[in-house]
Image (cartoon, rainbow, N blue to C red; front, side, top):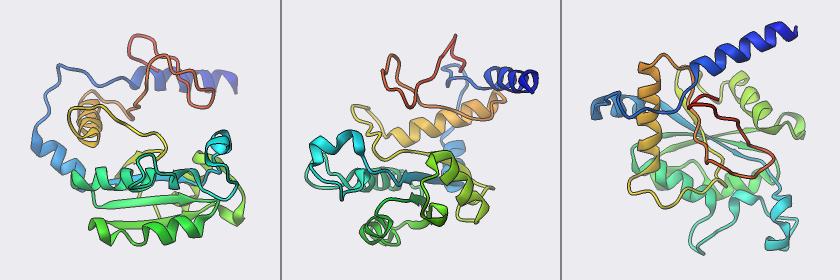
Length: 201
């Protein structure tokens, strides 16, 4: 079992890389990918690590506003919608009804938002929520999926980050990669760390 897992991980490390600067990507390739992409947003967290800031046990962390205008999840939907992505899946858990009522069907952004709630009201984590949404058909497995935690707020880029992500995905496919990851070097968070060696996970 260990040999199998190690060989699978070795193959995965070999096939996953960071976007390169040499592979050329056309606007048409990005547009084609945009038309076949769904943004999947895990939104079931209680935000226990930020409870001191919210002073509440009754707020879903993706509903927090950083600028007093829009919540983190609204910002995420808007920014992907602005580059032309039309399909979204929100994975709900804690205060699911509040999130669904707040975002609705996505029509205010001219997009389609679908929802998948954690099975049986149990907390299953991001991977479990994604698997559940694939199994119940909420996520179309024929589409490219961007998994974006709405509380991972991306700022300071000189162009839309969604386009940068999708260009990276086009480049990765041309280099026979099966997935791309967006990571920040030297981030000291215990839940989402990765070891990168020469551009490989």
